Amino acid sequence: MTPDLWMLLAFAGLLISGVPVAFALGLGGAVGILAGLSPAMLATLGTNTYNGVAKYPLIAIPLFILTGLIFERAGVAARLVRFAQALIGPRHGGLAVVAVLVCMIMGGMSGSGPADAAAVAMVMLPSMTKAGYPKPFSATLIAASASTAILIPPSVALILYSIVVPGVDLRALFAAGLFPGLLAGAALLVPALLLSRHHRWEAPAGVEQPALGESFRQALPALFAPVIILGGLRSGLFTPTEAAVVAVAYGALVGLCLTREMRWRDLWALLGEAAVISGVVLLIIALAGIFAWAGTMLGTFRHLAEWIVGLTDNGTLLLVLIMLAVLLAGMVLDAISIYLIMMPILIPVMQHFDWNPVWFGILLAMNIAIGQFTPPVAVNLMVTTEVAKIRLEQTVGWALLFVAAMAAALALVALFPAIALWLPAVLGYNV
Image (tube, rainbow, N blue to C red; front, side):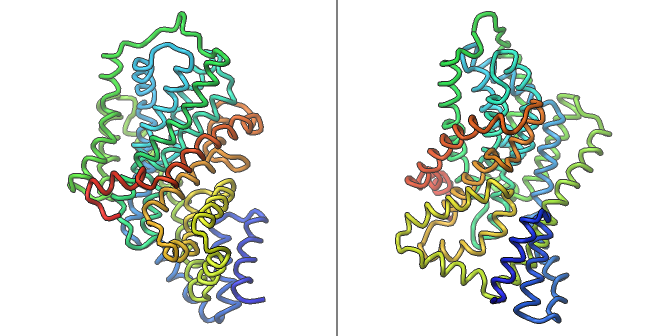
């Protein structure tokens, strides 16, 4: 067997046997070095591990993770839910609309689907269950809606994509993700509303509507968060990495001084929790540096890219095949692992067919978002089913329905790239 094959088989075998993705990447790269280079080259393991994380923009990832945890603890989700309920009013499907809207707004604060799913599920699931919604439906809708956090800026996944793909402006990616994120949310609302009205969930009679003025006043600090982050980026007041610092400081201010649902000891505990989550993420990125270096030196990624390009001259057909492959990967892997494993292979393919890298990045993000609530490994769905105290198998039927809805939104962005590219072009970013 060739060294390329040894490396890929070692990685796949370790992954199938249950070895964590980070160690499967590192050990797979080490096997490739031994098979194709020389044992002496194992001395580069430390350097490549360091080079994998020695990138300034990566500082934003732990900071945005901390932002999501702070806003969750600060009681922001509950205030947003009351404000959304005041806007929507009592009607069939009203709480379903509220769940989708709140997930999208929370996505504009943290950029993390699982964090949003946990925060919204804790607040919304009891109300939706009381109103007659089946728990599997509610859990799946919240999980699917929280996946829009990967698109709506700031997005941890898009930060990583901008690092992996050279020459891509992160501000352009953030702007490009906004309308596709809104489109994905709208696509989820269609089946949610139709089902709610068909089954007559949430009878409007007797449902109390919160006062609009008071609920808006309480939700105002939360609504300002996306404005501060995106407004600061647009004005040039701070860089994306600095935006993450501002988001943490603002979240702490809201929790400690405005909502007063967080204390200093809570902030210390959240710092520890964010460090643990960030450590897992950055460990994957660090050990992926070994795999990436070995694959580059052996020519593995070039060979795979040439094989993919050789499948067909039809760029549209190949794009469909790639999207299907990414969807399957999203069902078993997290977004960070998919980017680190697949992008070295897909970048040459993207360049061969002259696909816009910003548009392609948004397509990948939408596809990975679908994977976040598609069993068997659906991270968002695991969170919401745990909160709802139901089995994951109970949600499969609902999940497939929402997968079809978001896939329709993905198809629209693929057919009409302007949905993603219009806003960054208007804002003057390089697309």
